[in-house]
Figure 1 (cartoon, rainbow, N blue to C red):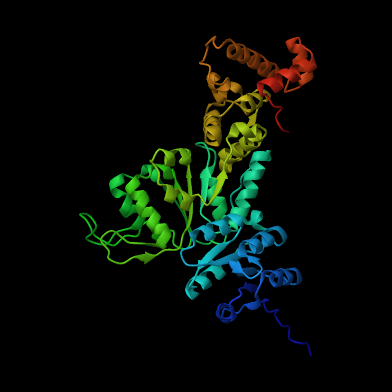
Figure 2 (figure 1 turned 180 degrees about the vertical axis):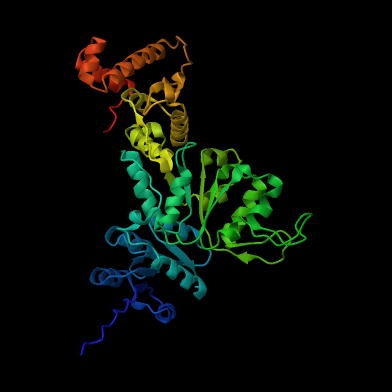
Length: 454
């Protein structure tokens, strides 16, 4: 007789609770045990470190003040030695500075005293739903392509931010991929199963902003014939991405600040607030610090939104990634037909040398136009329709001053033409130009002409 096979029961997640007050430890332990979790506790920093070294935990909850140190010390210790373990800190009521410091140090989230058990359960569920660190990049449906140092740094930062609930401010030029970065943070984080709600703040008329953000009740104004949720309610449990947040008028900035602080919004025409749980990510191509100094953006809102900053690099700082991005875009533009156009050697050289003031968005537009114009299977420089003035800095097209810009433009065009004719064989190109290989290499470095990657 065969023995009945037993299914292996899932192992309960282990949580470490660190607090020197016995009654708070007991409250947290009981709540976590009722959630089916395994709980270990410590009353000080040294005991907590010993437990972390001896056992594997899926979450750590720590008070900010401990007898032999600060909760921030434990946050930093976990970030350095147990990087995949989310840690949440418990702060005194109204201590926003400590909470922000903890988030910047790498904490997943924070709770304020007195601890709300509902908020505690919500935080624990979110932290335990984080994807495993080694598989986070594999599960993401979107990708930030490129291997340049700037892109690698941005990718690493995105991965760290995904394992936190801290508000994020994404800076960078127009077209540099700020919304893609926000979506990656969302998709690699604990809220990935919930909604990602993008909002272009500059596209909403000022008189409609409050109702669009917070919703409205039936009869609140002419035309309000039914209750309607706003962006905050739509993003409840997920991520609210405010693009071009610098375009918000000052009166709306005040209301947004209150909604973030109180974690609640009041619909237009309502008397009560609705609790909302959203992660805030904002972005703008403008310099928020300058706007704060000029009085066009509230300083208190700036500090609420800019807990951690992510800088997206312009494409001209990632020139070695241009051809990788171009190939990916050409494959996508081919669609179901699968007829992927190739870039000729001259077209590759022209793209690598171009400074892309419009960044990745401009590259995509250039390739869409080139696919439409190309008459064969290979994209030629003429199909790209690049603006010569943009290839040569600030000099106007055909201008002969400043003299050095004019000479650089002529030299660059001659080198690119020679490289295109020789399929980027630098030895042959130098022979064609009548200069030595070493002279060509020097001129390419001076003019920022990089060899395309295979």
